[in-house]
Image (cartoon, rainbow, N blue to C red; front, side):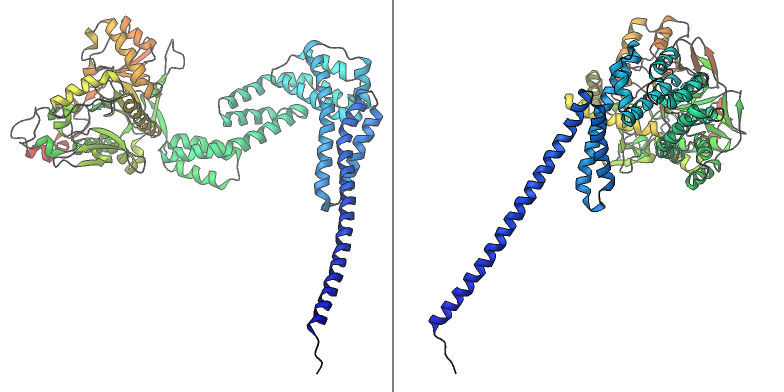
Amino acid sequence: MTVFSSEYRVGEDEHKRGKGYTVAAVLCAVALVALGVVTLLIGRKTAYEKDTVPGFEKAIEEGRYDDALDIYRGIQDEVLQASPENQSSNSVRIQMLDDMENIVRVRVDSICDRVIESRYVLTYVDINFLDSMQELTGSVVSERMYGICEQFLLGKTEKPVVMYFFEQMQPVGNFSATANPLLRELDYIETATGDVQTAEAALEKGDYVAAVKKYTQVNSGYEGFVGDYCDQRIASIKQTMYEPMMAEGEHMLQTYKFYSAEQLFSDLAVIFPEDEMIKSNLLTATSHTSEVKEYRGQIEVICVRSLIADKEIAFSSRLRSNDTGLYLTTYEFEKILENLYARDYVLVDPENLIEASDPTFLLERNLQVPKGKKPLVVVIENLQYSASAYDCGTCRRLVLNDENQVCGEYVNAAGETIVSRTAEAIGILDVFVQKHPDFTFDGAKGIISVSGYEACFGYVVAADEIDDRNSALTFANMPQIDPNNDDIDYARAKVTDIANVLKDNGWKFASCTYSYIEDCRNTEKAEIELDTKKWVDQIGSLFGEVHMLVYPNGNYINGTDERAVFLKNNGFRIFFGGGATPYYTYGDNYLYLDRAMMSYKTLTRKAYVDLFDYKDIIDPAREQNNENGEG
């Protein structure tokens, strides 16, 4: 057995280690040399790339157009010959080509702009540049020729300007290949201008269907430039319109606007004949529509106040108020709807009776309703929720639930806060339409009139309301409030949110004056003017454009009266007075209708026998607690 000394082993390890260091050193040296070569090559390449575009630009500035073209075409050949694996280098070359093309484009555009804008005459230098740079200038000038023809088609430039531009450009190089066909079509372009502008005007208004229809009509009569332009616009509009119009149509279905949805999806079916979703939505719409006809008879308008939601508060001997006769219970309102539905009434929007786009005059429009139906307008009176009515069991305010539905909120006899969709006329009518979609014509619901007296939807939305609100709270034996500006801003935001949901679901809004003027007929003009300004600024600003006014207590002002003229000049065009029998008339720039007030006190009126059976309407809870009589 051979034994090696420790000294020998150490020497052997050092020998091996030294040998390893030598190999490593050699490898490092090779790597450094290679890195140096690569760095040098990259440096040269970068320098080459940095010098190419400036060299191209300098050649153009010095009039060496052949040299400039050689530079451009050389890079273009490198791009075409580059291997797919060398994409990073290729992207740099492509950018270089773009930079060079842009240099040419800027100069060509400058020349063209001067020709178009100031009748500039091309110089020898211009012609030499445009002619010598061949495909680079040719592509830009061709674009400008098509562009100016497009501007002419759209009515944005005059024919003499177009003619002069072609006169200057046509003799240069091979530009005549583009110019001559377009020149031959100028008369056709001029003929199509009016129709194309009509299509574009519809598009600007967001009426995609009308735009496509018009462009399709134009396209059927033209070929060449006009036909190609129409094809491009139709394709572009179709791509733009599809998603928003599908969303709009589907929202119409969700909000019972079946007649509008039928029209929209019918139009879309022509434009997109193979689309199965459009066919399905059209089928859904048509399954809820029927033949419509022009209606010439009277229009029934019924009006209710906020409803009695808590009958125990309203009718118990301990809590009973003498004013409950002014209100319907939720039960009674729903029974009225059932009776009206059974008698073939259908909800309509009174704004469909007028054409009021011009503020100076109003046109009469004939109302369309489904065959066999009679029109009905529902008005909810002064939905501000006065604290003085709390002891009648009414709601205290409107709120939105987790499903973004409008609900009434009230405090019951046990002191519990209750939020219910069917605690107020709004939710009751919405739910009724869900059960009976044919109770509404194209999604119409009702009109909510609002004042600024004390609150709006139960929220104090202006400093002017605070004193009145506190007076009512004192009357109701409740603590007063002291809202600051932040509180008022929050309340205004809440009312706006609720109003937007209501509008989205077919509800409309009306003023019933800011201070709920009890007798407008005998109120001075100065007071009407001040009151209207406050309503517009403090209340109307929460609801957008409002064109209807409900006179408190039905005390209307004659339409030719200077006070009524003032109201019309402030945007109000439909006015509601009061009367048990249906009546409407067109006046000087306005429409007037009577409304029939629905309350416990008025339900027995003979005028209402065609609307409902009185005995079927009265809430049993009211009758059971009627020993003390209604107030």
